Image (cartoon, rainbow, N blue to C red; front, side, top):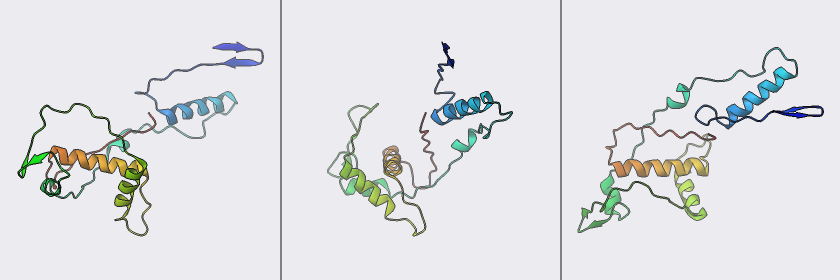
Length: 152
């Protein structure tokens, strides 16, 4: 707390495990409403975290062998998949603007006319998750979950 001539300034620190950016500003705005004399806040907080985790989507992916045959799968020689020398723990990827545009166009090419197009961020999420599924060699009938919390 810093006392000023005509009031005070209050510094706050929040752990991102507990509060994200939107929740922080909701808290500050609600506190300001109460400080201005309102008896209730205008927007109640939303605490049901299960809503963010209740997403199930079946992705119809072509078999992994189709990607290997096209040469865009794992390293191969004489038609055989060559396992990596050691397990990959971490990898940083860079996607150029041209590649992002291509990925986004591919994702949006199959939308119904009344569907909202995917953003570049959403299209990249689809691309990365499909790649993870292929790398894990999950059968097409498997269900898996891709959860990404943004603004945390």
